[in-house]
Image 1 (cartoon, rainbow, N blue to C red):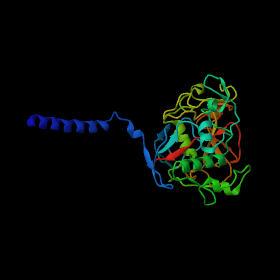
Image 2 (cartoon, one colour; image 1 turned 135 degrees about the vertical axis):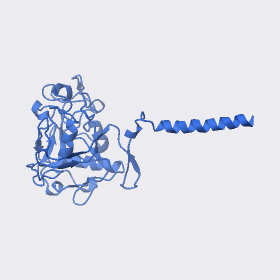
Image 3 (cartoon, rainbow, N blue to C red; image 1 turned 90 degrees about the vertical axis):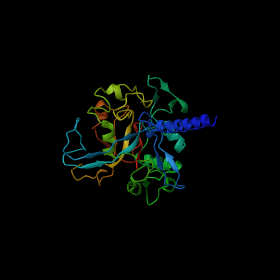
Image 4 (cartoon, rainbow, N blue to C red; image 1 turned 90 degrees about the horizontal axis):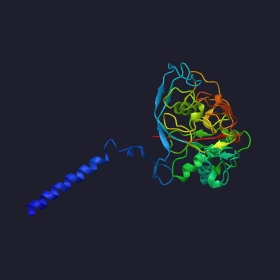
Length: 313
């Protein structure tokens, strides 16, 4: 009887070891569920939110040939784009209201089939709009603080948006001088280089995920006069939706001439900020992955929104 019990005990040890080995098999995709150590107040760990994807790093030498032709990845300009996490969708009206307490959107909202939507619950999956660049910074830091992460943005030496004052309705030198800590683990806007690299998706399409705009974008040819639910068109090669169309997306960079000497984070001069991707009321050309646009940072209109990114470090 003792010999039989000993055999059972040995069998149990082997079974337990096998179960642990199975947890780390190549078929397990749990490695995508990443955690990042928060270094905000409390210093606790914070899990990367759902619906983010990891965008691979790239070293651009300035000798590449791009299809379609790029106006920022130009001859002689060397860029280092570190890997980062990008939301697979534009910030929605529901997400914005949860963080900020209100929804400033003005565009009419429709579902994927073109049915007009009303009421907070029905429009919550449409992209937030009527957002200026300043608004986006406030959202990013507010969300970072709520999730116990280190905020990326600082205005006048402060990272808490409650200390920044009212969002300006015109150009403001203090807000224009905002700085970004790209090593912080909080939420931020993508740089223009990050945005275009992500939008291309490792592919050579005119639009993000296709050469046929109607497969991937809501624009003035199919949007019926308003925004549509996010993630209802085809995603691109990196798993991102609506990189073209729906709403313009703010980037961090100042808008200015691009040369071989331009920094990875864009022009050092200028006041206007970059927008990319086109919108529900924009022409098809505006939705191309290589198309450039810019507006004043206080510019708030019903076709402007944003999406957020986070560092992988």
